[in-house]
Length: 531
Image (cartoon, rainbow, N blue to C red; front, side, top):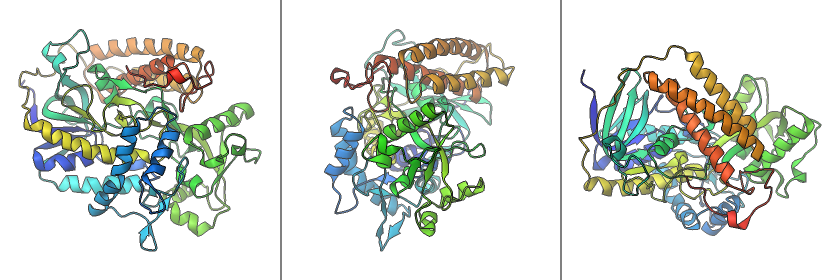
């Protein structure tokens, strides 16, 4: 039976802000396919509440934004990258507004919020649904563009590179090229070959690797895992950002209580009613996320409590409802009126500061493979992402990488010698329980041993258990036909391995990586972790 093959100029894997903004900007220069494993709107972008950090007020300055980013990144940011992305930010806000995005305003001007780590009010937002507004604005334009085809429920399995042609199999080389991707069409139950002149990896984050996360179920680290298997460079995977305030309620798992709530004056209390952030940082609730998350973690561990309280009930009720309509309504659904009640919160895995290593134009270490958004590590975030710099990065690098891709396709052609996917000798997975058990065990291991506070002993224990899960899952994968669930677990194990290995390499505590055996900053450890 003949296999299905497709040819496009630009192949985009992922449908968040990074992938969609890239697709729109290259669409006038060739054919574009956007591949997404769920519905197109299901991405981390959709759930981003806070906003987009950008210098939009005369009282603010690029230097202030750069300084705040560098301070949050604890010496690991690439300052040139920071300056480029911060400098391009206002243009991207204007571009979004021109495309139809409607942001919150006050007295005829943008209402600029303030979040932890920012010295000025610079968060452009649409109440507390900024990600949804950005996603819908871009998605609406993508669906109307005649040169873009959107393919939902299609799961990218592997990047196609020289390795699939029998070349450069044994070692990493600087001249490896990407020729597209093998994609599992879930509805057709078939693996299709997508040949592309340029491939954009915009698959988002990997929060599902952890037991508690603010990320949607699709965030299983697929892009990082594919790139690593293709022998791309991966950087800074030890820096996993845990959002300090995820709603703690059995009927509202993974619901984020935005940083902006603290920016508007909410305070943190332990279960005894004590305001504890005064004991951890002079910035109190407005300290960067890593400090707040560790403070909460310390309170939970030393007191034996299940959660802490976030309290904004002292603010005018109507103002709270106006600023945070989604948070207000979601909490109300589970019986919490945030204008009157304290909100129970715990930290949860939120954002991967590491990822596929790229420059500020999205170029990876593999030719014709670009990466953008949370899957990538440009050097902007360093050891800790400053709040609301993520959407900024996705939009700016999405634009810059589009310019690079347009040039790349002018001198590129499709690699017709690429073989089709071979699934001979495999059968459908017999029992879902084998997959789900490994997934659950992986997430528990990562939460218990590779979480907010780490140690050499915990990392060693996690490494041994991940090795066993890897062996079991790979054996299962080799004898089974493709399924999304199995491939997700395989990718999650790869990401977990990269986080553990990177954390084991770094012999200091810096930013989001805190290890009890090496509790201090060490100057000669101030470098990227490259794998």
